[in-house]
Length: 417
Image (cartoon, rainbow, N blue to C red; front, side, top):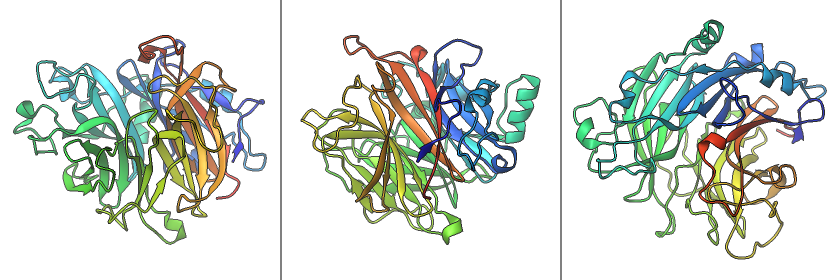
């Protein structure tokens, strides 16, 4: 991988909607079927309980020089607010807690977990672990029109995937109907499958990863697929995962899903489990591969399968409670709760051989900053990476608040794909 920024700087903070210097998080860079012809890549961010969309013009990226003027492109972004579903706040919700974003079936898909549930509902978690989840279909043309007019961008279709309050959701259009069970919705992720767009949630009752598949045209649930635990019974398969479809240009292949086996930071070890699901989303027999970095806890994975079969993994790393074994990855970076330092790792297809490692966020490049929530997407020979940062003080608790978060953007040229 080679940095591809311009003017000697490779890392840029995304501008804040309406001005200001912070308050942006959960950034996703998502190319679509018009990106190749226009150079425009859609970005989504969360800010002040809302989701904003913008288009960044990356036409200045020059494959011959493997560089581009990213500073000018990012400075020119015009953010537009995404209009949330009319019924989204009927249960006492106040905004969006987190979201996921993919492009599939010719549209942009955004799933969102709401925040601020009614506290009188006993089984709802005050930390937004079990709140309503919506899925919206958004068209690029509507994003462009909203940018031109300065208005909000509305979804063409929307569906309530999960109504967390089973008493309110009986008889509703919520896709998930087993109201006697509570699904964890915090840090869910989204993936396009051949059968539809799937929202990945965790079932805490049996530590299983559950995919709710939504038909992209009917906007109805078509499948409810559960990935078995296959893990140490003391651990819980987390929903902070990622998934990728086969590369059709190379003759197909399997769908791959990656998720960590625990959400606990600074444990003695944790594993990233890689599942091969077959030609469509189906229950795998067992994890295809397991990755453990001795002495480190790996969280919030996002990955890409390169054309040569290698796996490019972005993740947050934190030293374990025991001494780290092997190479050191930025141990001087403060680690406070959810915040640590970020790695880009390239492995072979079986996660057995490390090809290369790049520090995406560490103390040497940004003293006092911690990183979290990396999201990567490959666009041709370019790798687009976004992640969140916060200023950390290890002596100050609680953790940084959302108002102090910022999101960064970086582009790499992929030498061998």
